Amino acid sequence: MRDMPNLDFARSLAVISVVVEHTLLALGVRQIGPFPIPYLGVLGVMVFFVLTSLVLMWSLERKPHILDFYIRRIFRIYPLALAALLAAWLLHAPTGGDQFGHFLYPYPNVKDMVIQAGLLQYVFSTGRPVLEVMWSLPYEMHMYLLLPLLFFFVQRNFSLWPLMVFWSLTVLYCRHTPSDSHNFAVAIGYFLPGVMAYVAFGRWKPRLPAWLLPVFLIGMWPAFLYHFNFHRAWFFCLVIGLALPLFQQFTAKPVLQVSRQIAKYSYGVYLTHPFAIAIGLLLLRSHSLPVRFLGEAVPLLVLPVLAYHLLENPMIRIGSRLAAHAEDRFGHSEMLRYREVSSA
Image (cartoon, rainbow, N blue to C red; front, side, top):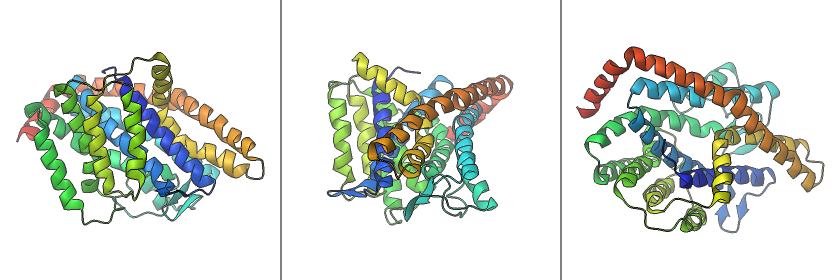
């Protein structure tokens, strides 16, 4: 995999925005000036979508095998998500909710748990999510269905304009859907800019200095947060995807070290930070604000590290071994069939 320090920085900023949003919401802060706090972290999730599709295109470039791709992604996404969901269910943790309420336990039935465990929330109707942050994971599962096809298409047509046409058509098709609707077509506009970034990294020479990247990314939040909705997120993702290849890579060691560590544990931070907030800001609500922040900070630092080393990384390794075994057994014929489909 390519060494791209800029992507670690962007991923770090994205997960920090999610944590800040939910911390402010837990404190009852829903608006700062003209900016709606409930969308602060959504912008961070959109950055994740762009980065994930970009990185997975490089992964497919390194190993263009469909079975390998799906096995690795399943073992990357599901184990930690299922563990966090199970923990929230067993503990009755106030980590659920939706746009109508946050930090509550929704008392799910068996059907709700099965649907949410399968990340099928946008396929079957379900009650309020037990772990609210898992709203983004079904989008990723949708993306996995499309990315390999896009990869083989791009290998034969390494150009931005077909992708831009595809993006424009999906945006035009979905523009009359409700701005908070969740479906596969709406999600394409979030992930496709990551594929555009993959092409741009291969065709463009970065000319902007690295120090401008933080200025650009931090400036993107207030620029899009004002009157933000999920339709405007298409354009936010497009700007992010097309801009990232223009910047030279970070070389400052302090920035590299911090952002690399945050990015390494970012998935764990994303899934476990609601528990940290529940402990610090809700369970300790009768204490002073510094004590509550400390009560959030300690599990916020500890839980992602434990999750990564005890579950996330071991399951990634198991997935890699199973994918390698599948590739040895089925790889050549499977890849040929997929190439035929993608070129049809």
